[in-house]
Every structure is written in C-alpha cells, then in structure tokens.
Length: 63
Image (cartoon, rainbow, N blue to C red; front, side, top):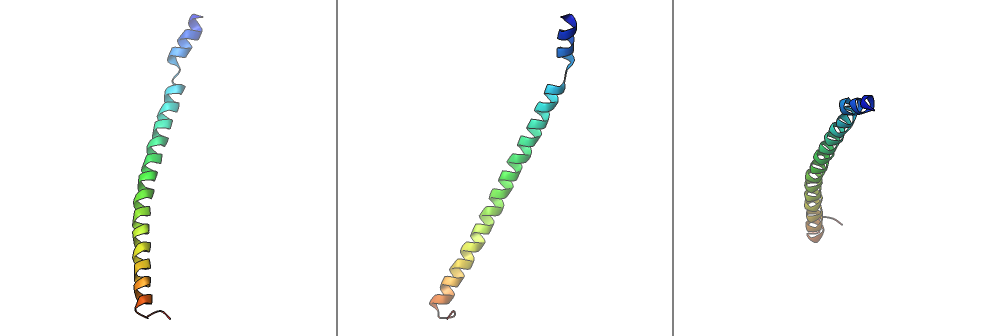
C-alpha cells in the first residue's frame, strides 16, 4: 500500500496533461480573437464594396 501511495505522489503525468490543456486553451483563445479581428475587417471591406456598387448603379455606371 505504501508503494502505491508513493507512486501516486510522484506521478506527474496528470500535471503534464493539465499543462498541455492550458496551452491548447490559450492557443484556441488566440485563434478566436484573431479570427474575430480578421472577420471584422473583411466585413467592413465587403460593406464598402457593396456601398460603392450601389452608388455606381444609382449613378448609371452599371448597366
């Protein structure tokens, strides 16, 4: 029983798994923040293009 308890105390595989989990969570958060920033810029660009197309069609530039 003493041997089993000693092995349990010295086992660090659970701590390693937690560290890898924290690293994966940090990477995921970074990816989400980056995707939101890019998505906002892409949305603004498409809105700008749509506005220019509407303006051009109103002015008769597009037939």
